[in-house]
Image 1 (cartoon, rainbow, N blue to C red):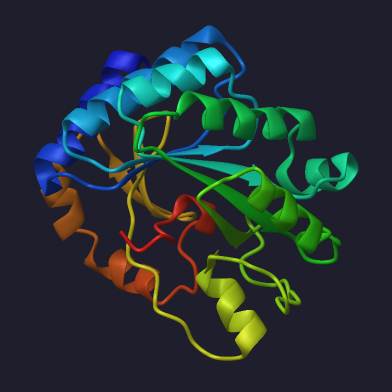
Image 2 (cartoon, helix red, strand yellow):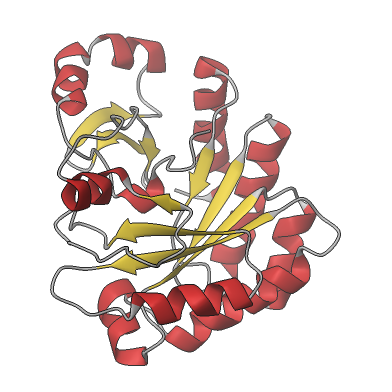
Length: 245
C-alpha cells in the first residue's frame, strides 16, 4: 500500500476503537520513502491521541531521529542482540554499528522532549549474548530503560541467568520459562500489515482493512479470537505492549 492508503486504514482503526497504543516496526533505512512513511505514521497516530512506539532494528539517521521527535514520537525501542557484531547479526539480523548509532542519534534528538529511549536486549536459544555487558553499555548510554525480549519467532524458549542483571522489563514468555510459573496473559493486539491485511496473531488473519466494515470483521471472528486468547504469545513480543500501557 502507499502512504495515503496506509493512513486511511490506520484512520479507520482509530475511528473504530478510538485512540490506541501504536507500535511501528520495519526498516526505515532501505529508501527515503520508508523514512517519509515512518514520519507520516507517527504524526497521524500522535494527532489521533495514540501513544506511539517505534521499534528500531536497523539504521536511524540523526535527521530522521529529529523529525520523529518533532512529530511526537513517544518511545523509541532499539533492538540489540549483543555487543559482538556476529552475535548481534545472528539475533537481530542487522548491523551492530547501525544499532549503536541509532541509540546515539535518538538520544541526541530527544533532548528537550518527553520521548522515552529504550534498549531491548534480544536473546535467542543457544546463543550467548553476553547479556551483562550489553546491559552495562545500555546503562552507560543513559537510556530510560532496558527490556529483555526473545528473538522474533522463538517465543520463550530461552533460559537466561538473570542474577545480578538490572533489567527493567522481562517479556512474559521469558518470565514463564525462567521462573517456571505463569505471568499475566498478553492482551489481544491487531496488526496492520503493509498490504492492508489485519492480523490478530502471527498466523491468524482477521481480513482486509479496506474491504469490509471493521466492527463486522471483529464480530465474525469470535472463534478465531477465542483460539488466539489460548496462545502463549500471539505476536512477537517486541511488537507487543510489554510496557503495560
